[in-house]
Length: 250
Image (cartoon, rainbow, N blue to C red; front, side, top):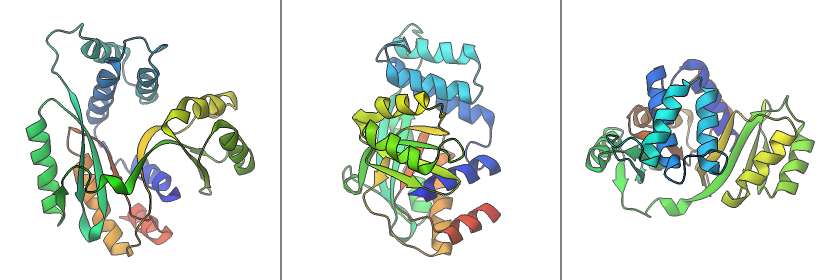
């Protein structure tokens, strides 16, 4: 799975995902709003704390963060009502895609996502048709310069992780959803600040496709990520070194 972290790094460098700062803030604000429904205090609402920390990491203004929290807690009576959707489908070349959305208009979002699937040569699927191929996991990624793999492996095992992956320039840790806080606390205690920390859908098994086919799948994913209502897109394509090099040079 180390290809995920490398692709995320490439996207950040090239500005492929969320090319406009406003698009980043829109996604972060919606994430904060949804999390704040469970309580507006980041100290007692761990999901909100994580969303706020992510927003601060992107230099989101304090006023924006506070506004998003008020929308979630209901203090802003005029705010749109958002809901979470997880849409499923088959992308190019038999790839399985899970599309995480936050929307104030379910019909619009489903229509927009279905259009991208169709345009890429894939199709939307019924709930559960694709989801069984994925597991909900805690996920962390950080530069290997922060912690050696041996120490990261030991830390991960002690904190309840399922897997620790050496990606060369980065290290990834996967674990059960309920181990998220334990792993994050262990990383912070070791002075490791992850580039990515969150809950994500991880494929149970990846499929092998050639470089050209990988590029086609990633293009479809980029098109989905450009939709305002889409927060994340998860896939089951194995990212080869050759494909990653081609994506970086594209």
